[in-house]
Length: 323
Image (cartoon, rainbow, N blue to C red; front, top):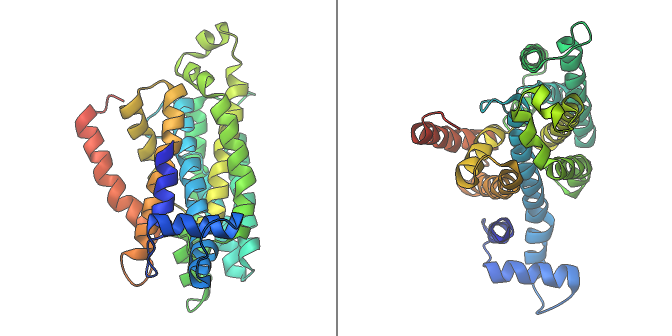
């Protein structure tokens, strides 16, 4: 539990204006609690106004994507499922692309992404329902279809927009970045991610029952359909909120659940809290690398893929695919 917070404090001091762990902590104490030694206004501006909102959003999004990934993998009983599977990430990206193409402000871009992410889930549920019934395999297939549809929409928007201004903005957004995040961005995503995470955390023992057949789970007093819907809604709100503030970030929701299970076992009562901690630490470190490795900022999804793919290969070799 302590590792994410220590990592966040260390990353607050990293950058062109470098600060030690003690100095970063002192800046926060002095600014928020007026306690301790006085610090320079430059240090306050860099740490509190520029880096702190990025670190907080990276912590929130990392935890959210990790818990959404482990939640969906439990629902579908499939280790290859990620937050992208049910079409929400593509829907949110389409919403952001439309808003960026029109040229509205960042606040409306974030809300557009959030609303289209929810629309994607509604379409996935509509398509997957046949004769009043909805199966897991139909949800996965419907999610893939809806995801492809929205990806085609994004490609169409990129094809027709102004190539001088709008296209670079859309492309950079879709690659994922926290460079434009502010405290206002935190207000957009915090309620959706925090409430959804609390729901999944409180139901974490029930997610183990989703590995059973529907009849077995029902015999233990669990309404599987209602539980599955509630968890999918929670994962959807998390994914749409994350995409709305920082674009598409891959691999976190796929890789972190596997690392968590490898370290702490398949019991979600332990694996979910561990995934939250690992997701926070991973994305904070990745974002810090993105803004400090070179003079210009590297999109986050590039780094998550470069680091995530070799790690996933290592896990495949280590476990032989037996998750």
